[in-house]
Amino acid sequence: MDWGMKNRISRILKPETGKTVMLAVDHGYFQGPTTGLKNVGKTIAPLLPYADALMLTRGILRTQVPAETDIPIILRMSGGSSVLFDDLSDEEIQVTVEEAIRLNASAITCSAFVGGANQRSTLTGLAKLVNEGERYGIPVLAVTAVGKDMVRDSRYLGLASRICAELGAHMVKTYYCEGFKKVTSSVPVPVVIAGGKKTPEKD
Image (cartoon, rainbow, N blue to C red; front, top):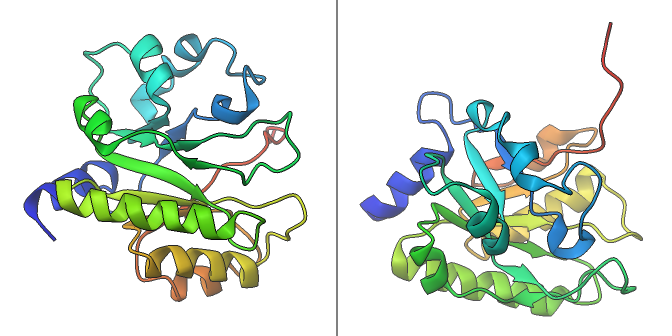
């Protein structure tokens, strides 16, 4: 692994702990102005001091994040579907690595729909992104997207995460589940837990 790749990963995964807190605000690429992210700039401003990295699309980066913001950027590279379409897995890589470099991204990301109707195209997109990432020293974060007909259990998430790692992803983002250690123990790259719905606060 080249110095540039190591440096970019170390900005996202803290070397002293190997952990990270990613603030993901890329939901609008298929959900539009969803609750809590109608005004992205206003939402993320007070949260940035508590995040280690910011995951978002190029449109939101350019319009909602001040250029002087010193936080590693994880740039969403895939898209093509929306909540108005039956199959959210109908995605492809839409942003070039050259664009990610222009935007000073520390990492690039795409979704992988293992077991979905578009499994082959999304996994091929991931593999091609890894090829380009290796060429330019930019790590790739694979997101194990789960279709509405799939169960978020350790068997499925372990399978999906391992396949992403096998294709060369430098990090994998997946969902927490019962028996999560089974997922992480078989994946040879860092695993990041995806967030979920807001839960009631404890007293």
